[in-house]
Amino acid sequence: MRKASNNEIKLLRKLARKKYREKEQRFVVEGERAVEQVVENGLVEVETVFVSNGIAVSNQLSSISVAIEEDVLAEVADTDNPQGILAVCRMPGEVGIDELKNGEGVIVATDAIQDPGNMGTILRTAAWFGAKALIAGRGSVDVYHPKVVRSTAGATGSIPVLSGELEEIFTELEATGWQFVLLDGGAESVSLRSVQPAKKTIIVVGNEGNGISENLLNSDRQKVRIDSAPGQDKVESLNAAIAVSIALWGLSDEVIG
Image (cartoon, helix red, strand yellow):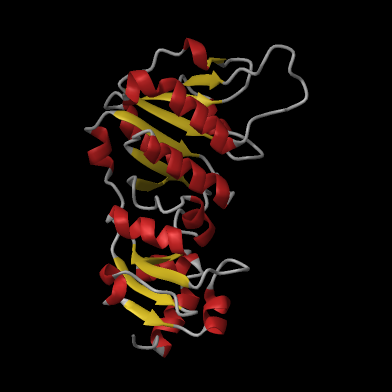
């Protein structure tokens, strides 16, 4: 196995920053199981695998594997205790708005979700339930941020992604019959239990601290709450990723199944 070149190591360092990930159209997957899962899925192109500590790789990966010094890998890794393996992968292209217009099923949209763990869990759960896409609104964490990729547990690339201004995207999708489930606990919301979902449904989840933006709430789109147990007054709200998971479960029979 050859050693990693200086240029390859420089690229690894650069990919820690979003602007370079976008420029290079590449991202990093870290950890043995995550790398294995991405390879097994075959949904993204694995370009180079970097290994240290004498970690053995499969025959499938041997032709694209390079050796990297343990201290260098520790420097470029995003975790405090790296497992000695990471991969550079090519970003899949974003899904087009026209493709979404002509489809049906369920889409998840994130309005300024900022926690990488939440975004990764949302992506993974949406893929599990067979969602057609994820729309990452302005202000949402980069879906290829190392912590997001790690949180997907190898599911990165398993669901199409579209990034952009939600109001503009929503207006276009509404024109072709897409309807909305805005996760909101306000006075005008209805219980998820009472929702009769359409065949073209978009679940919208808002920022962890501020919820869904006012410009999205101030519309005729359906606002939906997830009811707590009767008398529960000790927990103010659900985690954003958990709320999406419950909504996907609640809508799965009618929309996804």
